[in-house]
Image 1 (cartoon, rainbow, N blue to C red):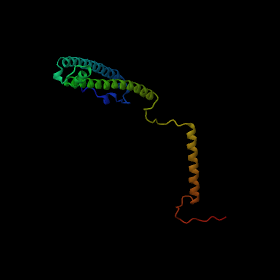
Image 2 (image 1 turned 90 degrees about the horizontal axis):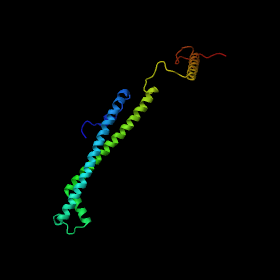
Image 3 (image 1 turned 120 degrees about the vertical axis):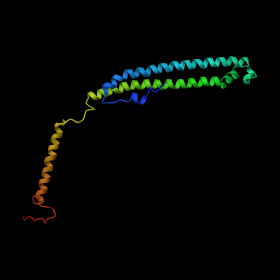
Image 4 (image 1 turned 90 degrees about the vertical axis):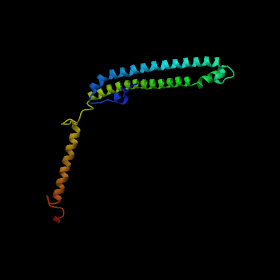
Length: 181
């Protein structure tokens, strides 16, 4: 896989550019699907190579068992000797790497399925006004306006009563006049 694959960047969604995200989605999905198919081909070839190396080593070991440290040519010792050969280890490691890359790419393709779903939901949220900023004037429910007006009226009454108690605007630190009854 080359440097043209950046999972984090390709999977990121910019909610302010949903149109561009939708335009990029099919191409990105195809790019990763194609690479996953290629990785599957590489994996299959690596699996084939492991089988060929194993068969060649099995034949060579059976032909010259002494060269490989075997006295008897039975299936179990021959199979063990095959596993110890560097050619087999290299082929097996190549298969493991190919499987790993394939699994990563399959996961990426599944992630692009999730991205498609996320884009669908982001569009629904956008249509519902989720990404819009506050509107001026705000639509305030009628009941809330009445509550606010009542609260303002009560606040004015409390302020007015406090002013009367202080002698209509006198400072609080001045002595109060006693009311005569």
